[in-house]
Amino acid sequence: MAYFTDVEITDFQITNWGSQYIAIQWDLYIADGSLWNASDFRFNIYKSEGYGSPEFISLVSDLSTNYYNDSDVDRRHKSIIYYYKIGITNITAPGYEDITDPKPFETIIDPLAKEIRRQEELIFRQYIVNDVYILNKMKSGSLCPSCTRDGVIVKPNCKLCNGTGRVIGFWSKVSSYAHITPPQVTEGEAQFGYDGIRELMRINLIDAPIVQKGDIIYFINRDRAYEVVARQFTLFKGAILHQTADIVEIGEQHPVYEHLYQN
Ligand SMILES: [Zn+2]
Image 1: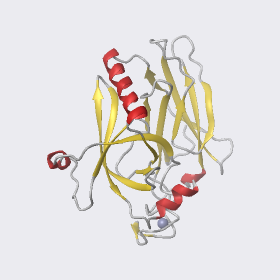
Image 2: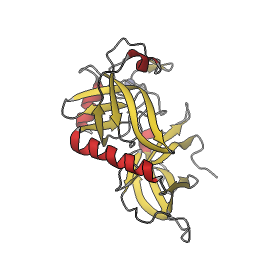
Image 3: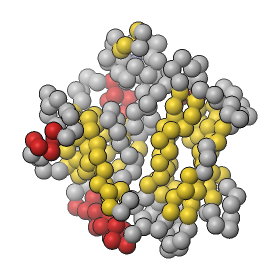
Image 4: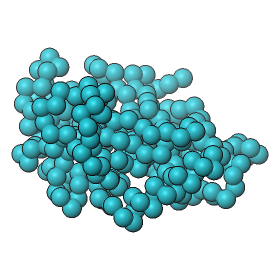
């Protein structure tokens, strides 16, 4: 029976773009009106190698992030299925933990998909690297007491919620890579349903962490932050080869910059 009744793990995703790790990502749903505070939750990850060893071991505990790279993986054993579970705890309720159902991740990947990914990895890491930080936007959480009135944001530059209307509003930053693509024809932009008022930039990202509309991508060398307005996957035989995101620059007065520098 669940202890945290109006709280649950959502968007539990396992991806594996690089050859050195398995990327685990999730979000935390907190029902509106809940008294739980998003920043009080911590996450434990458990892992099992499936066949023959069904016991779960503790992989990592007390994370305050929504993302983890499991580098303890053996890619040579093609038939291994790893299983992961996420436990949630809260610093104000010691001793209680809710744990998700196990989620499998098969290391069996189509050889051609693997080769395409390997070549994309070379391109990303060696030729056109833009080091970025990714801030995933929290999808729920306590409404910001400083700037939200009846669910409407009345102070867009609020530092308590970084202009999101939810306390903190973003998960901890995660390092990644981005490739800025050449300017696109308008036909390509139309499918994202974007209004086109701000100038769009299109980028390709590796498959971890996964970004969504509203997330922030900070280009370290440019010292500029961008908001994701749309994202799509390029898939091959079930594997994500990369993500393509349309992004727009965020004005330099936006509180998210200070948040990035401090965290
Ligand atoms: Zn606020």
